[in-house]
Structure formats: C-alpha cells, structure tokens
Image (cartoon, rainbow, N blue to C red; front, side):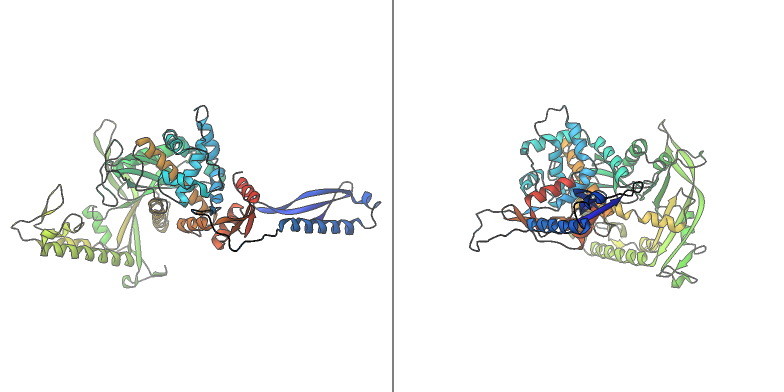
Length: 586
C-alpha cells in the first residue's frame, strides 16, 4: 500500500488517500484502488506537522499488517497416515477453460435454453462438466461423471440427469454454434475471408447401423459403422461450423450444406473456400461462384486439382518445363532446374465443368480460373519412397497371391496384372493366370512425382499467396487429429442419434476452447501441450483449507498472463481458490 495524492487542476487543492495496487485481470493491466480516504492536504496540515510523512508511515504499517495476515503457521504430524482410498488432488488448471467458456457466454446460452423446460438440474453445469472433462480427461460420459470430484465445482446432479440432458443438447446444436460464432467475433475477432473445409469420420464402439451410423469409406479403413463430419474453420484455425452426416455420405455431398449455413447465418461476407480434391466438383464450384455470367465470383475458391486425373492437355502443361520459376532451399530464385528445390508457374485459362441444374439435367459450364502448378524436391522424394513401399507389397502379391488380403495389399493391387479379388471379402482369388507387375503404371506415375496443382478463382492473389493459403489446410487436418487424439472423440460411446449429436457438440465446444487458448497465447503451444499443462496445475489440501500447488512452467505462466489468472502461487486458501474461479467466470 502507498500514499496517493491527486491535485485538482481547477482548485489547485491536493487530496490524499491510501491506495493498493493490483492487476485488473479483465483489462490486462496494473491499476490501483483506494482503501482509505484521508482528506485535503491543506486541511490535514492543520492536524499534522508533516501529513505526507505521517501517512506514508501509516501506509507502510498497513502493508505490514496485510502481509502478516497472509502468513500462517502450520504444524505437521509426520506419522499421519492417509485413509484408505484417499484421492484428494484437485485440478485448478480448468479455470483457464472456464475463462473461455464464460467469455463465450455459454453459461447464459445454456441457462436460457433450459428456461421453461422444467429441468430439476442445471444443464449448464452438465455441459461445463462434459467440456472440462473432454479436454482434461476424455472418455465416456460415465467417466466424466465419476471424476467430477476433481474440480472445485458443485456438480449437483445425478448420472441419469447427464443422459437426459444429452437429448436436450441435441435439439440446440445449431443454435449453439451460431451463438459461439457471434461471441468469438465479439471477443476475439473472426477472420472469415478464408474458410477451410474438410470431411472426416468417426467410428463407434457398437457395431450396429441405423439412420446416422452407416458403413462407408472409413479414414481408418475400419469396417464398423461411421458418421461423417463436415467441418469449416476460419483463417486463424478456430472451428467455425460443423455438421454430421450418415456414414455413407460422399465427402463432396456435404459441402453445400455446411458452407450454405455459413453463408446464410454467419455474417461472413464474401468467402474464399479452401479444400482438397475430394470436394472439387462442378456443382460445388458453381454453388460458390454463383454463375459464369457474373463479373466477379459471388464467393471464391482455392482447391487442389488432380494432375493424374486431368486432361492430356493439362498434363502436358504440367510437364512442360517452360515458364517455371526455380528456387533453392532457402527460397532464393535460381536459374537452373537442377539447382531447384522448388519451382512453380501459373496461367489463367477457361475450364469446362459439369453442373447439375435444378431440373436434374447436367450442363457443361465454363469457369475462368487460375491454375498454379508447383513441384517440390521434398515431395518428389516422398512420393517415390511411398510408392516403393507399396511396390514391395505388389511384389509379394506376385510371389504368393494366396497369402494376401485387402488389408495387407491395400493400394498395391493396381500395380499387378492378372490378379482378381473377391468383391465381398477382398481376398485374392488364385487363378491359372500368372500375375506380374505393370511397369507402365509405375512409369506413368513417376512422371508426376513432386508435382501439385491448385485451381482458384482469385486472380488478384500471387502464386505464392495461393500456395501459402492452400497450405493452411493442414490446420484443419490437425484439428481432426486433435479431436480424435487429445479429445478422444472416437470411438463414440453413445448410440442413440440425439446423444451422438450432443456428444459432438461437447467435442466441438472443447475444440473451440483449445483453439482459442492457442490463439490467446500466440500459437506458441500445441493443444497437447496446453492440455498437459492444465492437467498438471493441480493442488492438494495441506491443512485447514490451505492447498499446496506444485507445478509451474513457462506454459502455465503464458496461459495465466493471457487470461489474467495467477497460477504462480505455491499455497492458496480455499477462499482464494474459489475467488480465482469466480473471477474466471466473470
């Protein structure tokens, strides 16, 4: 504490008070508050010879008294034993999760949606538990409920209440996503000029199909029923919107539903969608740009384009070495192709696409687009290495076809001639034909090793900008990896459709919070590092409502600094912990 003086410019009088400095966590800077008003200096001089010196001493003593109050003496019984089945460790790192959760005003959203529903429990408390658990200790809903005691929260509901709440959550998934988008835009800013889009799928513990869970093309090559998820992400890597589809839905068929919701209800303005070749269809391109008659496309696209699946004319353009600009490994332009680690060229050209009209008929439309082609020495080496691994399988198929199945020979069968397989089981059928390697396919593929192509509607973007923009697609792949890995969104432990929808809503919220934590800490840390750090910020009751903490590092300091939460103290009173959590919820 210190003596504070403030002089009125109009009257010239000085007012004295004793103030205490503190960090305003909401505003992110240090300020002060008055703890004792003293009066005007000219009036105090009538009572004290030197008011300044006198009240500086008063402030010093008040500081000593405050410090003394913060110090306590604790005695320990070194022979004291733990009671059987004792588990007193509690997590405190979840305060960081609550900070984002409440900044997104999810408490208000879920409380409002539960109003007039007659619930005897708090749906917001249930969602809070599900989200915190999904980030820090992912697993089933039962696991989340059983571990609820590790947090300083009153999760005052029964297990059956959790499952009942899932049905309610399923009815408000779309509204929840729209609410989250509005709050992200208001609190942290949304960069939706670029929207990344991709599709993945999730499998289930229960091997049973229904309207949503269908057998389809699994990303993990599993035969279990799956559900498809189309996910859009903003330019900062923060999830924007998701939608679930039956497991047998083609990736390209999910595009217009998800992007349409964003265009109609997310106030994004014009967007440039970035996606891979699994999404690129004439229908989806035409849906984005509006029509070929428009002077400027309604929306834009940056999409990967299959070279091997292109026309002979396009393949010829790719392999024609004229027009390429060469760069060394440091990005410096070089003159000779043999010195290049990377090269690229582009052209503006019309391309015909097939579009399904409202009548159901297919028409050929022409789009004017920019084609960017690039080659990388690193990608070429990887393509060669990957193919050599598959060719080893192909050779094994030729040597002894009977030993191989669809699983063991995946990707290799295309290189083998005179080979047949059972369409149902994938097992190789032994015939009197002699199998052999088809080197014509190998030689044809080798031509295009290291080459990639991107097509775009954005003529104003440079070739490098287009390539860099497309490379950002890795973040959505990273997002899927986090969802399946760190958040353990699969295998899905619920089977009813409404509970499946609620499960993925809680996963989406958890993912959004993790991505915002990354953004708030300058993207210094991976989601796994953040999760590990928050899990380690834990404490145990040492004695008389005093808790001992034992973890601090740069990550915890940076998270705390970004959110205005002090994770640096070694000991805290229970009242201080509750106050810290209460502040996180403001």
